[in-house]
Length: 79
Image 1: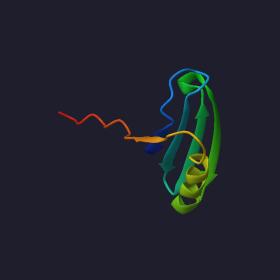
Image 2: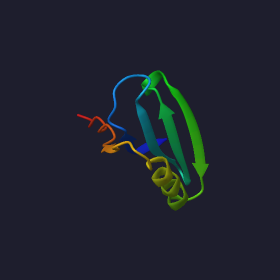
Image 3: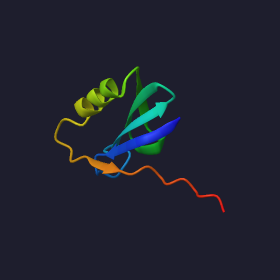
Image 4: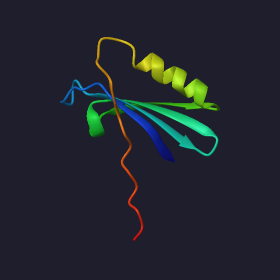
C-alpha cells in the first residue's frame, strides 16, 4: 500500500490532533481518518476510484480546523 497524501489539522496533543490519509493499493483507494495521533482511533473507507476517495477527503477536511497537507516520507534511494 502506498501513501499518496496526508493532511493534519495543525494541532498537537492526543485530544486535538486529527489526520487524514489517502492511500492506494493496486486499483483500490483507501482513506483513513485518525483522531488522537499515532496511538489514536482510526476510521477507514475503501473505494474503487480516486475520485470517490478524494470526495470523502474533501468532506473530512471541512470544518473549523486549518488543515495542512504534508508530503509522504520520501523513500530511501538505493546506493
